[in-house]
Length: 221
Image 1 (cartoon, one colour):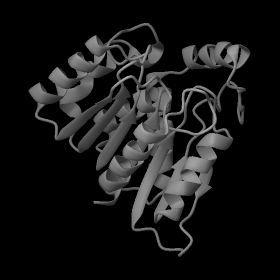
Image 2 (tube, rainbow, N blue to C red):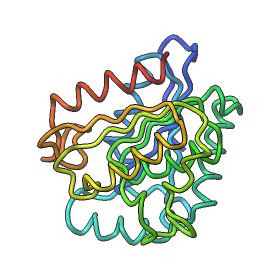
Image 3 (cartoon, one colour):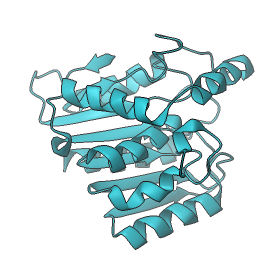
Image 4 (cartoon, rainbow, N blue to C red):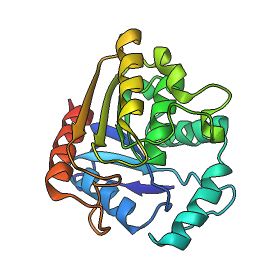
């Protein structure tokens, strides 16, 4: 588990960060460090630790293929335990902990929001919430757990995201409204999947800057 600490030593804001398909790589660690510099104590659980502990995959075709192999091995209850262990590292009270998740980490964050009672959750381009193609979404689609979310939820996605189509955004939005979850959904026009972190060709500076502002506001308010 990667831990990023605020420079002051204090930690008024406690955050679990859910990583993308490529593991707890340099980009995720840099984002955790950025959150820490903003005054957060951040814990990043390695969701792949049971099958490939410490793996850092290249963001190329081979890395994606291996990442999907590892994704298919993830179990819903096990990843919730991973997040719960991170919450314990951060003090043990989920009502005082937020989570930020990117891509598969966003899916895990949505799941943890329903299962653990987190204070606030930011899910960025979370795939496969509405289906059952992965074990994370079984036995029922993760979106079906929406009524169990008690904290605030921020959902950020690109309008050109090939993993999260508009129909999925509509389904999640309807579920959040029906359940009365305090939430905000932001769709960035003409923006692809994985737009947040610098480096990959999918990075988009303007949506990334807006997403950073919204995420920071959520977890520090």
